[in-house]
Structures are given as structure tokens and as C-alpha cells.
Length: 494
Image (cartoon, rainbow, N blue to C red):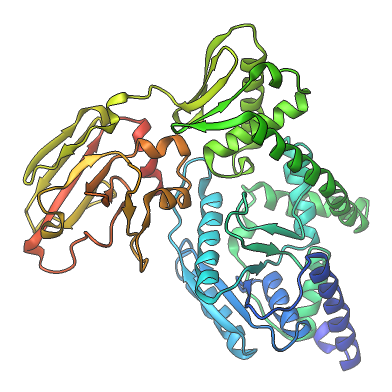
């Protein structure tokens, strides 16, 4: 038992571990600064070791803020983990923030991807509030080896098997100006447990880590033990080393992709256009694949890595066939109601079956029914204040705030929206980007508006400015019926 070890042994374990963390900070290109450093803190062994080792290795002047994201998916167990995390921070005098998030089953992401996106937004919220620009996460060398094998089994190319990086932007495109560092990427899970046990520090276990329906957990519990038994711990380091060696190649590929995007991709009226196709056809197949990957990335406003890699490869192959085929005019259906159209020397990417009448507006009838035919949408308004709304397709509003000019229409330049829980309104476009709504869909989402203010993103969220917050008799209940499947995309966010 490490807890029975001599003080000298315990000190030796602590110093050896923290020396690796200092190397990890150097690899992550992080130096102590005046701005706070956020630390993702679940209360598990990895994040606990990270938080306490950073507290010990960084100068006392470095402000640490531990951020615990409570997803609300595990009931009382989630609350128990949050309480444990807070107690650790109180014990070691570290600032603690618990962010409660709502995990939405966002299309293409699944529950795990949606939870990851919720964490990203929670971290950004805290960062903006306290002026931080860096987040430390506790991924270790075992996580790296598991990631590489998982992506290899999924059929990933060199991008996938390059694994996690020491330092990356929080968002796939880096537009937030906020970076993730991983100082434990050269530290084993065995070393982490030894470090905590030597100091008598407890941690929590997430029971979902035992769920072998998840590929990562199967690799961790079934494959890695066999690798260690027959090859040794050096195999784990070797897998992680392979990922690190490939990192410079990925940087080179990313630079090539930037050049390809600048040369061949432009945006016009909400659609992406690849032009001239004759020059694209002269590129090598691998460069064309990067071009198609870039287009898909731009359409989805998220990293294609969030989608199943096998499906992504199929889309790239289909786009290659469309671009290199003999037909000068052809159409390819893409996921999510998107399509790629070949028109001689160009490929055009956007929504399928674009309706020119989508831009029309219909004045809301209160009480009564309002029908927007091109949106296949019907809104029923009732002043029955005893009615309780159910689900994302019903909402209650302040009748006085809606006034007589409320209309149903689609997005226009200059529209603004005040999300619930936010102190200020923001551009609707920025909000939809934040919610990962694909670019072509943004102009098809049904809205309830008053002038340039959006009162309701129908099927999703009510504006904080227009919701009923007072006398129930002053309210109006709106119930939406939507028949167009393409327009139901946003309901997956609710």
C-alpha cells in the first residue's frame, strides 16, 4: 500500500509526477500568466491529479479556477460528484465553479457529442466571465493510446490516428481565441493513481466508464490489458508516440487545406461553390479529398470528426465521383437535407428543394390560426391562461410585448435574439452558429418576430424579452404544427 510508504518515498513519488507535469506544460507551450487558468474538474482521478499538480507546480500568483460541468444525466450521482469536487477545492483553497448544463441530442453528434458541446459552451461562459483564455484538461497517455486505437478501428486516416494534441483550440475552427492544453499527455493512469494514493486523496468514479457498449470502454477493459500482458507497457507509449510523430504532418495538411479553401471555395447567397472544377480535377486525389472535407466542415459548422468517420469517408467518395464523373449536370444528396449540384465547371452545396417563397411573412392572428404554407407551418394562438405548455412546440408569451405586429417568417440580416439565461441579446446568426445549426438551414428555420427582434425560434427557444413573466391573464399560448421534415432540424436542439 502506498499509503504505508515512508515520507521519503511519498515525496519521491510526488516530485517525479510533478516533474512530468512541468514537462507537459512546456510541451503545451504554457507559462504562468496574469489571466486565470481554467481546469476541467470532474472529481475523477485524472482531473484531481491534474488540478493538484498544477496547484503545486505553478507559481502561487497563477490563479486557478476549477470548473465542474454538471450535465444532469446521472441524477443524484451527478450532484454527489459535484459536491465532492467542491470539497476538494475548499480543502486546497482553489476557486470552484459548478456549471449546470442541459444536454441536447444535437443532430449528428449523439448524446456523447452533445455532452461534449455542452461542456465546451460552459467552459467558454466561465472563461468570458473571468477573463481566461486557456483550459487545462486531464487526458493522459492511456487516453491517447485508446483514442488512436479507437479511431484506427473506425477506419480513420492520418488525421484520426494523430490523436490528441498538447495544445489545440477549444473549437474546431479556433474562432473563440481560447485554447486547450493537456499537461498529462505523457503521464500514465498508473502514475496518476500512485500520485493520489501517496497523498491520501480520494476521487470519484463515473459508473458510465464501465459501460462496455462504448467502444472506448471496450478498448480500455478488453484490449489494453491484452496488449500490456503480451507486449508490455512500452506498447502504450509506442502508440502514443506514433500519434505525436504524425502531428507535424497534420499541421502541413491543415496549411494545404487553407490554401485549397482560399483558392477554390466561395460563398454566395448561403451556398458554397467550388470553382473552377477543371482545376480541381487536376489536383491529386488526396488534395481533392481535403477539399471535400473542408466543404463538409463548412456546411456543418463543426468538425467532421464528430460524425462517424466511416460515413464521412463515404460522403467524400461520393463527392469525388460527382466531381470527376462524365455528367456535366448531376445532383448528390447529402445528410441533413443538403445536396451537392454539379453545374458544368462548378459544384454548388446547399439545401435541397429551395423554396423561393420562404422569405414571405405572415402576420400572427391572436387568437386564431396562422398558416405559413411554404414553411408547412401552422400556429394556433389561444388566450386561455389555464393552458400549460408542453414541449418545444408550445410556448407562452406576454401579449403586450408581442403587440399587433408579430409575424411568422424566416431569418433576415439584422435579426437579434435574447437567449434565456443570458444578460444580453445577440445577433441571431451568432446564436445559430453557437448552436451548431448547419449554415444552409439557418435561412429555413421558422421564426416568430416583432420587427428585427426574434420572439421565438419555433421548436427551440423563446426569447427572454418576450416570455410571460407575470400576470397569467396577460399571456398568449402558441402551439406550432410543422409538417416539413427538413424544417424540423432545430427541434433536435430542444
